[in-house]
Image 1 (cartoon, rainbow, N blue to C red):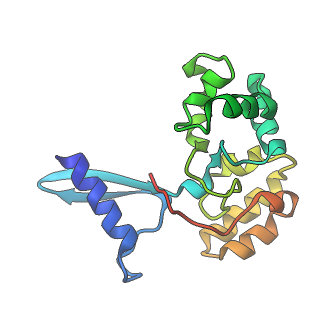
Image 2: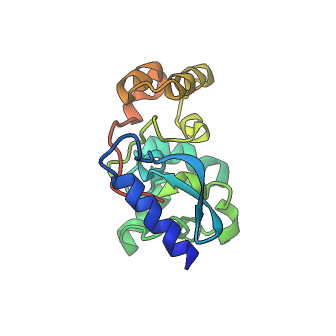
Length: 174
């Protein structure tokens, strides 16, 4: 149906060789007409989310502290059960109801790769969740990003959190 067409269109635009027609996985919503219907398509790069199987313990502690969780609890769960297959498993691992982490879920993945996040595709909120994040740096990085700066330039602006940043993109998208 239309949903499948939207997914196919998004994949085609991600892989489009011509930069003029390519859609970056930047979280912007694009409106397109297809088969007489309007589709709203948003593509995000999983490299802009925290991979709960790979993220640094200090970052994980910072992320989970508001929920009463810890990196140690997550590590123990992974040791007993294997890596998370879906971010929704995190609530179960922490002994919380699934709805407890619902507001936090958009910033989590199990397909992020190396445990660091890409500042070109990470939401502002995710960057602010990093331990020691400086809001002024995050705002300056957001401005650079809007102006089309590269990952290295944006990362240099985020000196307070640069050890948790990567220039890697993909290979997974939503």
